[in-house]
Amino acid sequence: MARRFIGSANEMMNPEGYELFAEQAKLRAISDAGGLRANRPGESAHNYGAAIDIDIIKGSRAVTRDTAPRTYDSLNGRLGALGEHQGLIWGGRFNDPPHFQHPGIPVNGPDMLRLHQQLLRTTGAGLDALMGVP
Ligand SMILES: [Zn+2]
Figure 1 (tube, helix red, strand yellow):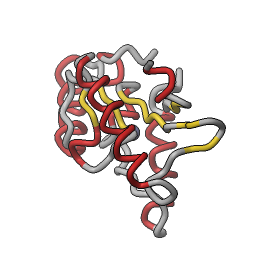
Figure 2 (figure 1 turned 135 degrees about the vertical axis):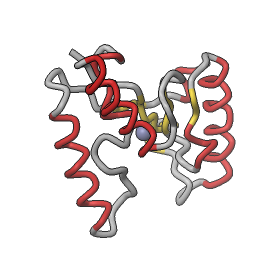
Figure 3 (figure 1 turned 180 degrees about the vertical axis):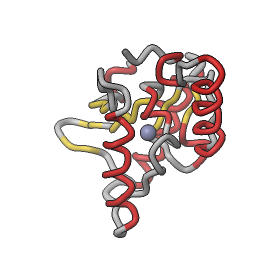
Figure 4 (figure 1 turned 135 degrees about the horizontal axis):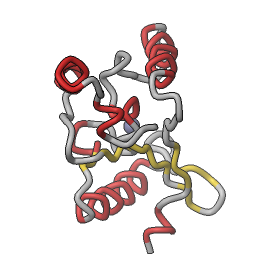
C-alpha cells in the first residue's frame, strides 16, 4: 500500500560527504533569492545522509498542495503516519510534509550543526560519519 503513496524520493546522498555542504549552500542561495526554503549548510539532516524527501505521485502526476490540497493533505497524513510508525521523524510535524528524518539527530538545524562540530572536535568524526556517509 505504501508504494501507492510513494511516487518518488530524492535523497541528497554524496559519497564525498562535505560536498553535501556545498550542495546545501547552493540550495540556500536559491532560498535566499526567494526560491524554496532551505537550511544553511550543516543545518539539514540531508547534509548527513539522514533524511529523505518523498513526493506523492498519483497516476503519473505529482500531488501538490497547490493542485489538490485535500488529496495532498490526506495522502501526506497517511504517509506521515507510515513513516512515524517506522520510527522516523516526519517533517509534517514542522511544516515540511515531504521530509522524513532519522530519529537519532536533532531536528533543529543549529543544534544539528553544533552536534556535528562538537563530534568533529571531540572524536575527529562528524555527524556525517556517525550517520554512515562514506
Ligand atoms: Zn527534507
